[in-house]
Length: 475
Image 1 (cartoon, rainbow, N blue to C red):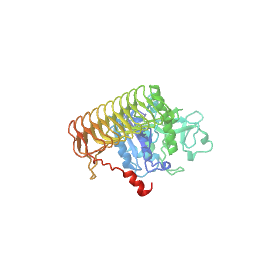
Image 2 (cartoon, rainbow, N blue to C red):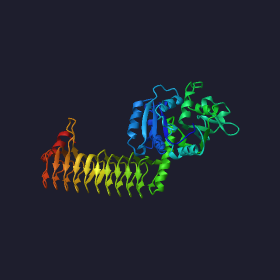
Image 3 (cartoon, helix red, strand yellow):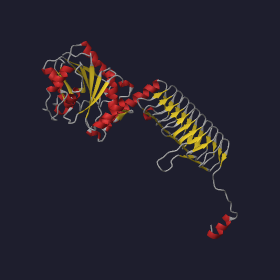
Image 4 (cartoon, rainbow, N blue to C red):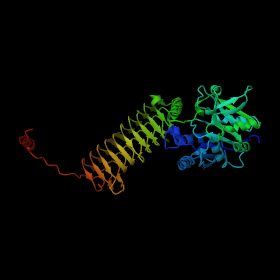
């Protein structure tokens, strides 16, 4: 029965609602630095190259399944069988493990059980369990942690010789046992056959009336099955998140690590405590991030980029030597090299800026491609549009892309055009190469190449009007 690593499979326990989160969202779908708790645990497990990972879901099963489906496409899960199983009736961690084991392959030689709510767990925290299994003949190896504040955790109980004799949950601890600082992390590496036998022996004779997974340790002791442990003194990687406050503490811890890693790689952070960089963000050398910068999702920042601060950049690419000025929001967009954006600009999804594009203050773009050297300096909206290189768009210009009947239309502006201030381009419309649009025009028909489009009411001046108004009103 001894534990062999010939075929390692993993069971992740992710069925709980997380009542103390006070949320309709399943606990494992809450996020730390841009990744769900479940995604982070899956990433750690995948580093051990298991053949299969079984996720035990329960509360909001469909939402958890959707998250797993989305994660299947990530490179770190390539080649790993991934399955979700429903724990329809939740009767404790032991029952969840029984449900998970039902989907573990008969060929599995070892099963690693992980909690789904430990977002900072890493491959390097789990590898020592595998090393221990290779070095010794054992059926079960558990990961424990020396915690200076063990309240709330199950305690590892040892005899006078230091051998593990059991795990006691906090609610079942005696006063003496509560003084123990070695806690259970709920992480176990088991021989498959041993785990199957141990789970079959579980009962509900405890304070909560549930099947405790921790009782597999007591089974190992009573049956004289070879048992070992690995103890870590790094607390944060093995902690779970049961409340939003605990989640925020883990987020702050990981965020500080991420920020330090980027600074060590040559990125300047004006105020590291108030800079937010998600796990999958990539940043080049000699970049500078101002206070309040938030880089979310799969954002990529090239070399020598300057972000002034208070900006939010989500799932976007920023080209080399570009500047993002104060308080910009950029989402699912691509910005070329040597561009200047903002301040107070909003690039909505589908914005594609070529090199040396200038987007000024209070400019909004959406599904717009702006070619080399385009300038949109002030107070404009450019949506569902293609703007040719070298074009200048004056303040207050809008592309009227919506026709009021649920349809969006495209505006095309060719290279070298000049669009006067306060113009409205009513799509579908095309402005030909080198054409001009007079300020204040509402353009409803295409303007040919090299032409001037004028569409505004004729100005009329009324002589003496101001003086007559004074005589009538007394102003």
